[in-house]
Amino acid sequence: MDHQIQLHIQHKYIQPSHHTIKQVTMSLSSLPKTYQSIRRTAKDGKTTLSFVTETTPTSLKPTEVLIQIHAVSLNYRDGAILSGYYPFPVLENGVPASDCAAEVVAVGTEVHDFIPGDHVAPMFDLANIEGHEDGMAALGGDVEGVLRKYAVFDQKVLYHLPKHLSWEEVCVVKRSDRNGLLIGSKAAIVTCVGVSAWNALQMPRDKGTAVLQGKASLSPMKDRH
Image 1 (tube, rainbow, N blue to C red):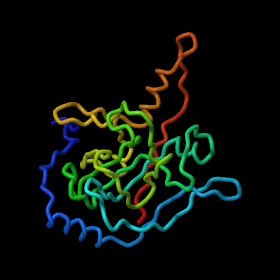
Image 2 (image 1 turned 60 degrees about the vertical axis):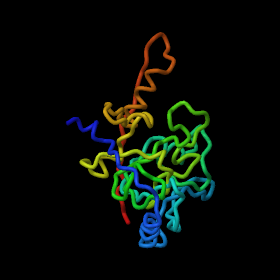
Image 3 (image 1 turned 180 degrees about the horizontal axis):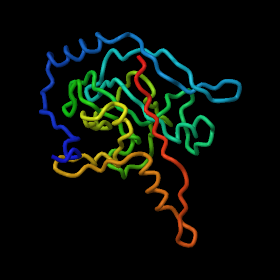
Image 4 (image 1 turned 30 degrees about the vertical axis):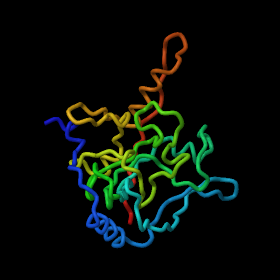
């Protein structure tokens, strides 16, 4: 069977109950009380990165999902933000990076597409679920990114990742939008490098030609904790 068709796994809807709520509470209480993240830090007029101790979430809203991040891939955009060349607003002292591979740890009482143990990743633009909404909420830019041990996202911005790939391999897999992994259809899976090249071809070109120069730099960051 085509691996791309297997990327989306449908789970049966489970009616929320006191038992479900108790399971979520037990999952959260079994986690460490703190964890490490990496945040942008301004020092001597320059932006650098620093390890920061964060508090692990103790509760989830009904549609929220707690994930444990195992690997992160770095993009040119992440370096541009640190260097001050990124043309869009970013969070001061925010968590960088947008591409990751993670595992579901706990789910809210109304989450029915994910269960603990699923391999998942968040979308790049959390404000564009279908791809045509106004506004933008870009991971690692104007919202907190994924260079951290744990993160909480609404179920609508998460998608399934294939389990036959390692964390390092799958953390560089991206899709075009939330409709990319529909059951029975071929998944629109592309890497960040591929998207950048394709977008460059669609830019205005002088006299009908386009010159592309650069290199693919996909750097998985393995879980250290």
